[in-house]
Image (cartoon, rainbow, N blue to C red):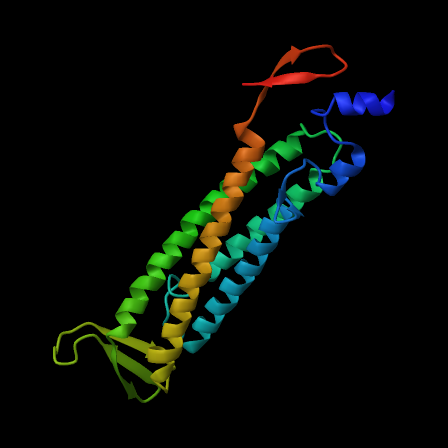
Length: 223
């Protein structure tokens, strides 16, 4: 009788073992329960972006904050920690707790902010990369002075304090600019994916509570 009922109710929810394999709510991404995979990627990318930014800042103290976007990496690390917290609390028996709702909303909002910040970083790094391509640099004592138009006496000049070898600017720094653009592009895509999955699995589908059939089967109509 039990097996017949199982075959007849093929549309019912899977058993506890199946739910355990599929994660707390059945949502998986590349075999890992959501948002574990997204949080892991965000943590790795955040650490990578922050590390490259601190390496850039070590070249010269004259670099501006928008040229060394460690803040973007730190933000993504915070988002990833929130993702780990969200993955942990989804195992609570009651999925409608206030804590869960707050963490879900915060995770969605921070993923959206991370997407915007990553796009800004790509724009800043691309701008500085295009400027550095046209640099003509010369070494003066302990500094490296670069100009965009050497023949123009009033042309724009960039001074990198503490740089004794101008190849650190024209070669190493340019490579870091390019690397930051690539990392933040991937970071933006991951944040977009996280926000999309959170919206799709948590907020896009609602159940109105209109019961179809007997109370034992509990089939509900999506609206």
